[in-house]
Length: 289
Image (cartoon, rainbow, N blue to C red; front, side, top):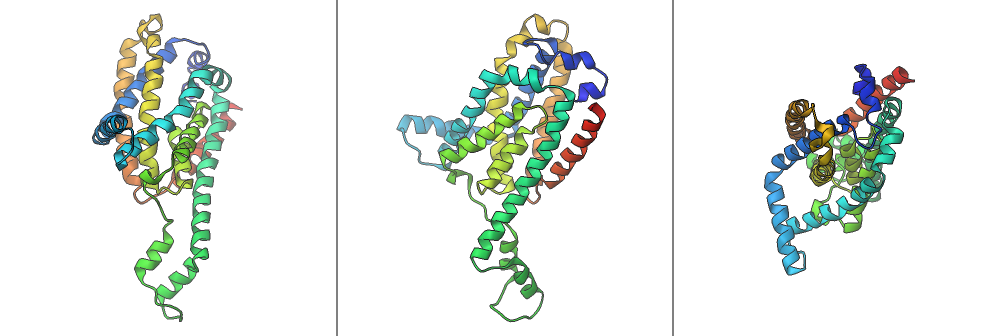
């Protein structure tokens, strides 16, 4: 969408061939993004890789880091298989400005629906436990009879229950990883849809974001390395300076974005990003229709 908005129509056309200078340029951006994620989560990756090695040597899982490592392994498989088999076909068919605008709008709907479903599930849980959030707030604000209600109880009732990453079953990790497949449709946010999948499995926003970004690192890095011959071969001739400049910017932007988002999701939700996707997507649908 951005090249089309800037009037770079040949760049848009160059997304369809099996190989092109523009794809070589994108390879550099992908590798830089993955390296930035690797640097940001370097301490966690040291523990995860160490846990995988120990677990493989013992042939059993004993710690949270070991389990998280294997969860990431199994969650990476679905998108990896689909990417190898269908990436070019999906790119050729859907990597067009209007299609991307439509899918960006759909992405906003997915994010809003994920937040709504999570709140609905939370409300059902607390109603089943006999705790009406509205009544709890009213009791906390003033006298009204009924059992004593403390501010901490109201706060707990206002927040959906969450679970630890290490409690995910391997089938749930496969489900969350499979959500990444939607990101092969240009305009769908890989991080957004995997976060929604994590939220629907009971993770809070912070852990859903953390798992999503950890999951992004091997997927994006593998995709970049897979296409690296495009950059090192003839398609990279004459554009390696531009690739270097773009990659540096991509790495800094990725690092800053992840740092901001990890803090954001400690207390906030996906709703503002959903609204942005809906507004930008619908505006671009009108522009490219």
